[in-house]
Image (cartoon, rainbow, N blue to C red; front, side):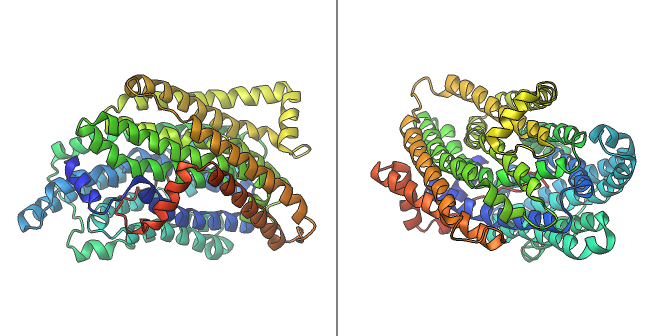
Length: 562
């Protein structure tokens, strides 16, 4: 089954760098529209009680999507479908029967569980957001019930997305999240002024429907649109669940940890949920472009190497991909920390998003982004375990790390409340002294600490399981990338001071050009340093760019959350 998928990919698969650049391009387009969505929310609604309710309302539908819909993800279904389909009519009928089976079981589970959640939401929300007042709780109940439709449609979109990618319509599949964000933007701009927060949730549903509908013409063209059947082949369903359960449980643990963090944010200053979510979304941009892209691009090669018992190739691929993640992550960490205020002001700044909101969000991003490299490497090592057929270890490590994120958050909040001098020192480091609500910095700090713990544990286990025969050495890449990152950050920092007198930083365009030009100068200086080092990763990227990476064939991963 897996060999069919590997063969499908390898027809035009030139290398991990090429595939990662292509995946990163798709991710960048989606994330760019996501940033536009967040900026519009910050401008139209502003960080406050309404936006707190809106973001909190995502948590239950998001958990439902992750725990149920992800069981029928593209990456799980594709090998099954590839194993059943050929060009003759008989195998196409088998493939259609398989899709109908998955569709019927999915709709049965999703509709029943959604109805049960809709009934019991009033008894759940008080535990989710203990800091909300009664009006916010009432809004949250109704908004969450409306949003329960979104995981149904996005899950269906991922299901038929298997067909879309099978017939190589990768662009159509990659447009789904774009249309999803367009629907959300429609709700913000046109529905919110008339219907308030219910207009925002209506935009989410419109976006979810768009996410699904954009792929329907492709599926209809190939006569693969799923139909509901009453005689479900449960044996086939359980085979799919058995394969996808570890990944789903891992994602579910992350979602539960996030629910706890939102619950804690609800007890802090109003707007804390909004600012925390804005910061998390911003740090997710480089995680998606680097960590997810490289780990997904490497996965087919890792599977092929391990299944053919070529352990040397497996380890070499892990080492190569780890170097790419480190190579990209360190400079981005440096630039985001130095340019954080300019980035936040351009991405979110408006009259309703105050300078205090900007500073607090920028500080939160700085804490989140510390764990960028570790998040990317965790994704790689988890897929390394999956390629080796070992799904239990990464699951146990992730469960433990998710629990520790919650523990760290409680601990940091306690420390900041009872030992304010520690919080004051953190405020000085992050330049948010005098900004109200800085105690919320405990949440991104806890998330980053949990991510670093997750990396440490999985790194220890991975070395023990796979790297005894060949030591992994990232020191050369780390040192060169670190020096380049320091130079990038220093040049960008000096440039900010210089261009403060050139551009009018009282305007949005002035702030943009100040940050943009400073960032470009920083990047150019860092690239020069890497060139002088004759850095292997830099020349590998240049080669990939010359190699027409956009012609690669890759399986584009579905959305990991709503």
